[in-house]
Length: 351
Image (cartoon, rainbow, N blue to C red; front, side, top):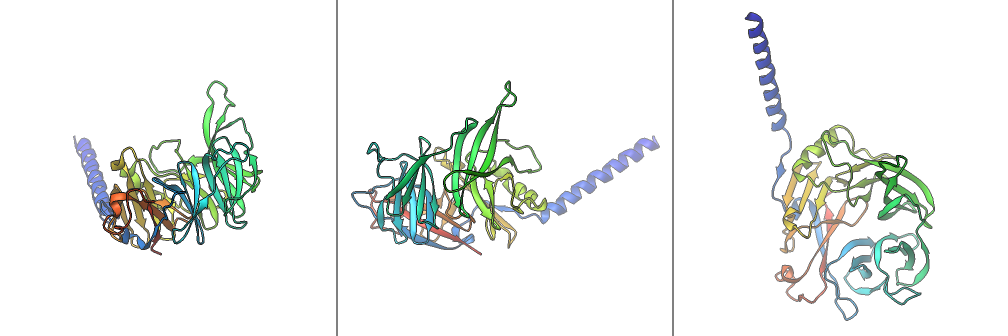
């Protein structure tokens, strides 16, 4: 009887000790704010009304990239060129030389050293253009039978980096789908590669990440894909920090759920079919404060409503962008009509 009582007493002490520890621990954990505005994370937001003319009428835009005063963006698989004032400078992918038909773009990279654009077509063809849209030469991607999907591409340090899904068929009965990061020279000759694994989050997570993108931290390339489980993102972030998994090294091979900026860790997901599932997560490492906002941060710079889709515009994840059109611009840009091109907003994050 005494033994049973002692065991019960020890168990209760351990239980209350654990509960007390969790209460104290959680008390000092940063909490996610369910609401937030751009001014909470942004130092400034610059509006660039994109010029509308008979040669360029855009609705939805994506893949926005910049080189100094030159801005490039994609709409309906076509690549367009504007300057930093919004002046339209031309359509890059005007036509295929052999057919006269427009090039259908799958992805592209900006080579700022040679003032070139490297465009991947939907048929795995490669086009090299100058900034004026002049086709310099063309080739084709290397054909590797194991490649299933050629993913996103980026230019960094005089090389092209690409995420590639490939099929490992060593076990013919159960071939596996793997994710790799490839490093190419500017002519797509393979220089190196590394097999990617999802980051350890201290919990069960999805093994395969969709649409991973390339980023750079401390001069080293890493891969990130936004979390599809925003309810866990704060705990995941704290776990990654505590385990020192955000120290990016030369051969870093984890797919992170975060973009690592100088001050902010960001995860943002946009689902155009279900906008209510879109979220923006920002963790302020300076103030140890987090925002996890469903539907996106509120634009309190130009009063255009929520920003459901923040797109990174630099590999270092310190500058983002979004765009607005139509009724959302009625108050701040009353001269813009529903038929006009969108207004592009450049977001400089706080340092």
